[in-house]
Length: 307
Ligand SMILES: NC(=O)c1ccc[n+]([C@@H]2O[C@H](COP(=O)([O-])OP(=O)(O)OC[C@H]3O[C@@H](n4cnc5c(N)ncnc54)[C@H](OP(=O)(O)O)[C@@H]3O)[C@@H](O)[C@H]2O)c1
Image 1 (cartoon, rainbow, N blue to C red):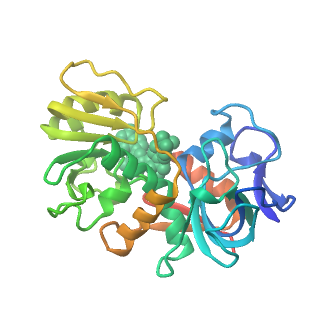
Image 2 (tube, rainbow, N blue to C red; image 1 turned 90 degrees about the vertical axis):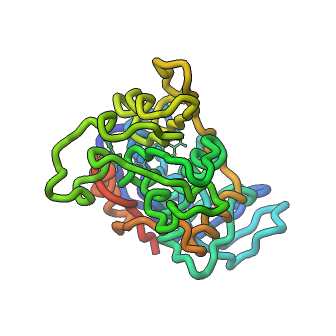
């Protein structure tokens, strides 16, 4: 199979495009022919070596959409020909390739009305947003949430929802705000392009969902009302410690499972979540895609069209 892989950690130039052996479905696994795979911020961190040493050649990529082409022993709920999408198990990558072997239990069937490109674009981002907003923050209808990094892959997903401010049963339909200074340049109006301090324009929030980290994460506590809670996905395994004692700081677990993927697909089909703006690349352009991703200032998702 063709794949984009690295033989050492480093700058985007270490990404190579070439041939690697086809994977084989082990017990409990399926092999999926990948049609589309997305670029996540974790990918350039993995390429750089931030997550530790790996065995080379190493294929990056954490989510994908494609068609099942082989079924391993013990798998009875997926068949050859099924259209599926998935997020790799924590600690496993390999989606920047024409094929992948993956545990069947964490693979979800892709609705036919969702393209492979759209499905991969909402896979890891969707799992993360659901884990943070629904399971961890337990956001209730009518609450106000500040979403930091609102133009990016993860934060842009709930923020994109046309129905997010409508009262409804889904906690995703709370009232999101994103300060002008936290929105990507293309989303800013010409009169508001100056950097600003979001703590001066936002206050009294029930919750914060931070996807940025650093100073933005630490200062996010200031916008919470007493009893407010904040979820952080870009920081280390530990959520940052607030300087005040009347708010809660949380780290979403973002587990890999079939059910939340099915749920995110359903939310997209219902129109409750809109797929992000997508820029397409070929696997052979992986270095270029990484340069854009690593710049951290783009809008929407970068997706490899593999077939
Ligand atoms: N824990 C998990 O399981 C998990 C899962 C997925 C992602 N993550 C992490 O979450 C983070 C976000 O991922 P992503 O895929 O959404 O990244 P992304 O698509 O690269 O988005 C980054 C966003 O952050 C914004 N940003 C960058 N610097 C900023 C600043 N100083 N102030 C305000 N906004 C800023 C950018 O907007 P501007 O252009 O306006 O600056 C951009 O929209 C990454 O660190 C990733 O590793 C964790």
